Image (cartoon, rainbow, N blue to C red; front, side):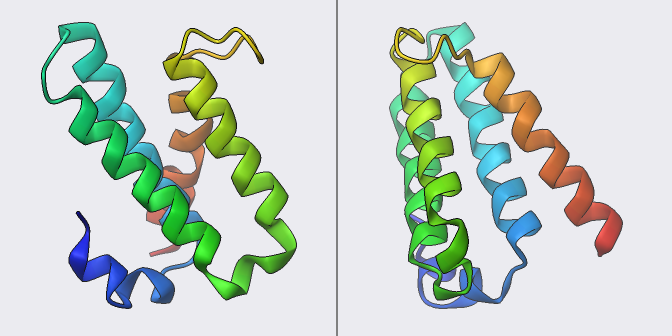
Length: 106
C-alpha cells in the first residue's frame, strides 16, 4: 500500500517520524471506526503495514519488543481491548506524542 515508503524512503525517517506516521494511520482508523466506514479495513491495513516496515528497520533492533508490543496493543484495541484493556483513543494519544516530536525536530 505504501509503495514509495516500502521502496526505501521509510528507512530514512527517524523513529519519531515513523511512529508519528503510524499514529496518523491510527487516527484514521479511529475516525473510520466511529463512522462505521467501509474504509476502516484499508486504514487498519495501512497502519499494520507501517508497523511492519518499522519492525523491519534494522536501526531499531534494540527496540523491536517495544514496537511489536505497540502493534499488539493496537490490534487488541481494534478487537475491543480484552487483553490489555486498550482503546483506540489511548493508542491515538500515545502515538500523537511521536508526531509532535517529529514535527518539532524537523
